[in-house]
Every structure is written in structure tokens, then in C-alpha cells.
Length: 214
Ligand SMILES: O=C(O)c1ccccc1N[C@@H]1O[C@H](COP(=O)(O)O)[C@@H](O)[C@H]1O
Image: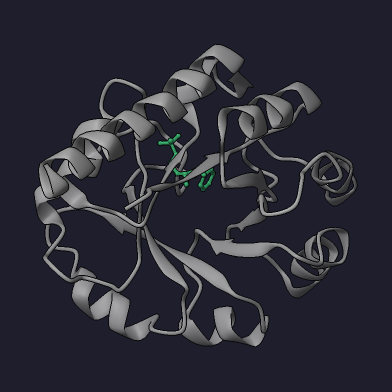
């Protein structure tokens, strides 16, 4: 299987170009004003114009107001919505768009129950439980993920080129998502690290395919 790749928290044209060139399937824009990776809807619109067909823009929101959601959706009408705060299933469904719902993984968290409550999500995105909701570059204990927790899982939380292959082999996610792990300083993406991350994902897929098909 091909593991899809999302590169999140892009703020500059060069980062978007690097992610597309490296083979990313999705690009995330952070619409959360408290994040140092935040972009305005107008900025996201300008960056998303660089995306070729079949690369999906994703808008990340944390407990956004209706006005903030609307502004994001108007700027990026074709975006997938990533809810990364305390949104309820009703909050997510009210927006009427395909969405990812972030689960903040920590010991005792009931992922099976969470996934069943958010069964209308396209995928459950697994992130470590950190202060500030996410994007903390922290790996969580992957053994907390029960088998068949959701039909589509996006693995995130502290991924980088060195550990993403292990994550793919152990979790077998539909997709992986990275932000901190492709940065040289907080919020500053590196084209080289983006390329290394995407190459590591492709190597892991090739290794799994060899194990499966010989
Ligand atoms: O990136 C942020 O600033 C952010 C803020 C609030 C919620 C989520 C955020 N980022 C997302 O967190 C995960 C994990 O990121 P990392 O690779 O550990 O840095 C990922 O989905 C980011 O998009």
C-alpha cells in the first residue's frame, strides 16, 4: 500500500513547492491564531494556488468560531478540514465538509470510543497529547493504538525521517503527517528535510511491499 503524506504548517511559497516536488499528497495550513505556524485565509489562498491537481489543501482549526471557519472555507473551497481542538461530532458535521478529527493520544484515552463518535470523519489523525493542542513534535506510545481503531488512521506526532519508517511498519496508517520533523527551527521548514521525510516514507512502503509480495 502507498502511505499518503501530509506536510503541515506551511507558510512560504518555497515550502509548498518543496512539498509538492517531494511527492506530498496533502499540504496543511494552520488557521489557529495562537500557533506560530498560523496563516491568514488570504495567505493560504495564495499558497494553495501553487498546488497542482491531486494535491489536497488541508485547513487546520482549533475550536474555531463559525466566522473563522467560513473565512477559511471561502479562501480554500476545496480544502479538507482538520479539527484539532475540542470540537464535538456535531461541530464537525455542521461544517458540511469532509474532515479529519485529531485524537490527542495519552494513556487511558479510549480511541475506539472516540473513533465511533467521529464515524463521519474521513480519518482519525493521531497526535501526542501536548500543551497547545498539537504540533509539539512529541511522539506518543504507538502501542496505545488498538487494532482496527478506525477505518483510516493518519499517524502524526513527532514524526521525522528517522522514525517514520518504524511508525509505518508498526501502525500501518493510511497516511502520515509531519510538521516539526521537517523544520530547522520552530515554524521554519526545510526543503531538504521535507525531501528526506518523503523518501523515508517511500522506502518504508517499498520494504513492506517486499515483505508482503517477496
Ligand atoms: O502546528 C501547529 O502549530 C498546531 C497547532 C495546534 C494544533 C495542531 C498543530 N499541528 C499539528 O499537530 C500534528 C503533529 O505535529 P508535529 O509533527 O508533532 O509537529 C500535525 O497534524 C500538525 O499538523
